[in-house]
Length: 174
Image (cartoon, rainbow, N blue to C red; front, side, top):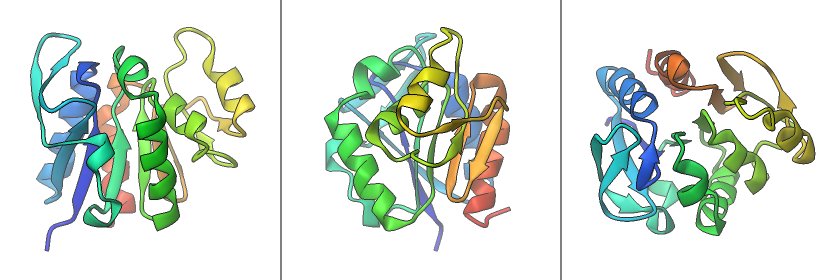
């Protein structure tokens, strides 16, 4: 049976390269990628492209998936940096299954408390990531992709393929 993972994207302003490139890598390896967001229907990427949303973040049942990963983009903080996402992430962490984020979204994981005592990376174009990580007990590693146990973080679109490959690696699919 194929492993099923969940990508969480903002309903407006998700990063299409991070979503698309990582999804292609994982689907090519035989994974089923399901997409959740803060609104149902089509999510609109920062470049105007769209992605079908399969379910709402608040309706995710962690037992149904083998991995949970948040995609970045300018809409991530506006649409996903909230209690629904934090609740899902906290519930998810208890399962022991792989999770992570790319670009600006590791900030969401840090604020949810699920990166505490972990090494992680993320987008730092505004110079605020180090402080956010310190405030939330995260060790900032300035690399394109960082794997710490079952957590995979990436720093942006240029790391999307590698991030997807590392997710596959911790899911033992490639």
